[in-house]
Length: 458
Ligand SMILES: *[C@@H]1O[C@H](CO)[C@@H](O)[C@H](O)[C@H]1NC(C)=O
Ligand SMILES: *[C@@H]1O[C@H](CO)[C@@H](O)[C@H](O)[C@H]1NC(C)=O
Ligand SMILES: *[C@@H]1O[C@H](CO)[C@@H](O)[C@H](O)[C@H]1NC(C)=O
Image 1 (spheres, rainbow, N blue to C red):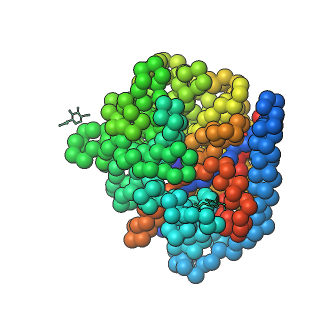
Image 2 (cartoon, protein in one colour):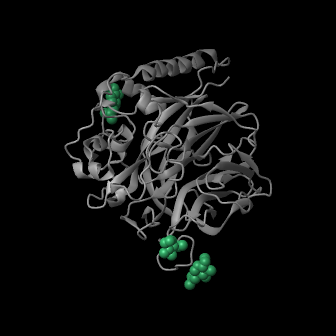
Image 3 (cartoon, rainbow, N blue to C red):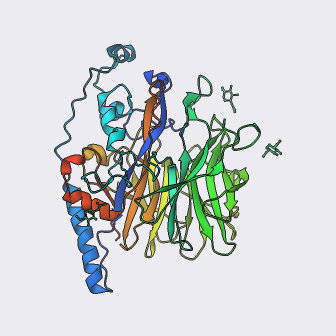
């Protein structure tokens, strides 16, 4: 993450170089976006009656989301809380863009994207009020009433226990810079795990992989970086295997780390880190295909391209096989899924902490070639569509019981002021039923970022 400023102009959004006043900002907390990846063209032939209602639900969600609040987003940024000298100092002539305001902790606009705790999703105490649904940026409380800490995360559905496990970075710490030129960071705390039967009520299972306090040579020493942990289950060995991005504070190590456990709730034993195929690896994910084969996908060559390669049968290492994809396209934050015979991947651009335009890609073989389909975001208005609803992809989860519908999980990274260190922070996603519920309630409760990611499966 910290080294994401290399291609700031690629998508026309300003990135925040170290010289900007955001020097005094910290960039760690995040929230999340939830949208449904929907296949317009999916027609279900079997189980006619049931499928029709499924299809109808999906259509109605789509219709409403596509038109949502197109014209309600009229923003002339309130300037009162900004320091006017900051603007002059930069010699800035143009008014700040909405993305600038979004990133600027001192802007009132910023707060609108990061709703207060009193609007949090609270499945235990939420009852039947009109807030009984998720929208992007809302804080999501676990069953203890604490904000969920699972960033850059992913979800494992565990067939053996019929339970969902949500893994992600626990960033509930102080944000600081390791040195004057360093990226804003939070010490490694570890990987959180939450369990749920319904994708709505999440129980904190604690840290399933802990950061290392004392041993400074250890990959997980708190001074290092652990991002985007993902867990898959190996049917042959009966082990839960976690892959993650491991780095030093300067993002020069650019490696993947591997950990393993007998239980989805850990504790995971950390095994090692390496550069896969002797290549840099920063943003990454793993993907387990229907045939049990698993793959590592990672940004490489200075984040200019993605690499994909199969894991070994035990999922504990990569094999020697690797293909390069999206060469010179500078994509990161890959999230893969499969629908029938086609593989899909959503990626983001590389613009530091600033949100940018997602792209969807498709392939008939997971190893490629991959074809770029375009921006999958619809609904909201152009600002939302071009910023992935102010979020960055991390995972795509098939919706249970709704074949062809997927939940898109993303992180809404939040530049936070050191003094006002809210690590309030939350990533989340919603069951499609809750979307539907929400659509029947007061629409004004969706001020920002309601939308949907649509990939046409043609
Ligand atoms: C919510 O409302 C529905 C229908 O009015 C009712 O069946 C359900 O028990 C309520 N749930 C809670 C948690 O109050
Ligand atoms: C510290 O970590 C390194 C690398 O994992 C390991 O080789 C070494 O044994 C550890 N030292 C202690 C005292 O645990
Ligand atoms: C990171 O870079 C800074 C400044 O260039 C340097 O002082 C520091 O030792 C580096 N840290 C690591 C872990 O490489």
